[in-house]
Image 1 (spheres, protein in one colour):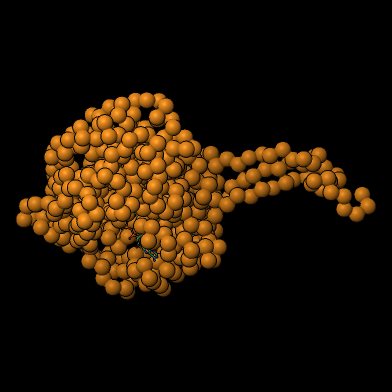
Image 2 (cartoon, rainbow, N blue to C red):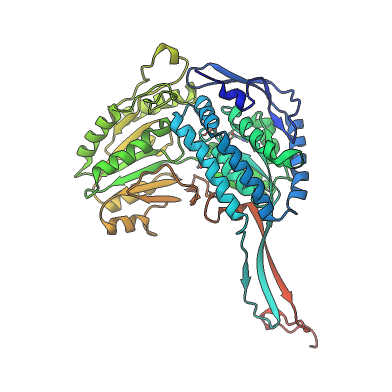
Length: 509
Ligand code: NAD
């Protein structure tokens, strides 16, 4: 494998795991970074400790106090240049994502593109941080609502989107007048270091502390962030298990959290659906990123009249999905992130069988060439079930698709909603009544509901996130920026008397 792109990104030697405007001389344990492709060592990070965390947080806060005074369009101009720097390094970043997270190169490049897109979005936003004017009930008064910078945003990210999730958060936070401290997954630290280096180079010495970085164990630097009163917002992406710790702990100090947690996404397929369209949407949703997207299609709720036909078509399509090295152009399915994920796959397949499911395709570790033996490769798997088995209600972060037959749209909607998670959902139908019912208030209860496209591959222009155990957060497009700011309501009296609201008379007047 040609790894010369690592030098372009400044990752060719042991790197520090803490950035507070300069790369700190960290003294924590050395973290050996391995590629999920073949288990080979691709870097070493000297991890940070709680003392490093305190320094990074302090520097980010000090930078925030100055940054908030810069007009938002000027902040946007810095973000424009950061976006351009992402463009310059898109190829190298895409390759790094493939190398460190195991995504096929097309998806790695797609993730780098998402960083560029959100930077562009944020630049436009920097001139649109609109407030409101509100009619006052009192004469010679006006009311308005304005949005102000919030402070330092703590950004915790998962391994499976090792650069985009930080970009979604930090590009918006920067135009909103905030600084950031990023705590990435220990499975993908090199991606975090590369992105921080690129952004810091654009920001220059004066503003580089705005993009703080801290790489270290959850129980030291992670906990320090959760308890840090200088972090008014923690935006945390990862498992529901993590969210259960982060949410209450941040709330304990009245901090805010934006939680983007696990999904268990379903596609409903009605008997009038265009099945070839459905097959394409389902295969990308279920097999893409080796089933390691929060929006991965995990459940298919298919009308009984077409279920056997659709299943046969899927089995055929799965046979075309080449498993292997994600840098190989023919590969559609790369490795899982690690052996623990492969064990979770094995466990889910065994549980599905035990609970009455039938393995229609896959279910085993994949056969790969000897050069990839150090990676964890599994076969994209289809399981047919008569009903929603207990294992179907769990999110297994691997390419397992459960097919459940349904008799009607309403049964499909009920099953779609009958899981603890509420991230993404979709329906394939040519019937406008079915489509609209699925999207209505009595339809899907998810944060994302699509028609005639799959559950994954969202665009940055919409608000992204989900309900229930997915955490309720929204980030990226639409008005998600409001989470990164504080709202202020102001009433101004430009008259000469002081009338009270609700007509209250107080004293002699
Ligand atoms: P994970 O929960 O193991 O880790 C996510 C992040 O949380 C990591 O940075 C980890 O170090 C940190 N973390 C864990 N415990 C912590 C603690 N006690 N204090 C502070 N930080 C802590 O998740 P993962 O395996 O990296 O990612 C897969 C999960 O992420 C899946 O459940 C997936 O659905 C979810 N995910 C959700 C979204 C979304 O937008 N909803 C996006 C991507 C991934």
